[in-house]
Length: 188
Image (cartoon, rainbow, N blue to C red):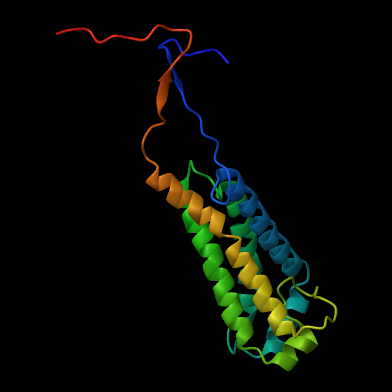
């Protein structure tokens, strides 16, 4: 790499660890995939998703609107999170999308907590449309809570990257280039 003509090379410290931009980008991509798969699965079989939502018995009015809007919003959130999530160049977009994603997960978790356990066992959560987990040795509600808590935790690098980016507003430090003589101040 050639040295700049002003004789100074910026010190580049790669961002690593939990709050590095690479980790945030990977987490944003994983979360985006979850939202896209979830929304697509629901849209591919809206009738099955509608039946699941009706069987839950939580929403009394507007079921058809909810059944259509939820997967559309999931797809939109997934696509935009995939494009802009974890971006230090667009911190407001990143933090807004991550916040919307976390709020959505919390809303879905609260919704599922209102569904009777026996109904969840019988028809599933509808999280990925008609697709559902096969029987496991853990209560279905616990699986959903662990899954959603894990997804919420996966947002942590996104928020840490934004916080770190806002706190680190000073320009990078510079050091003299080995190929140039040190500069001396001119007397006034």
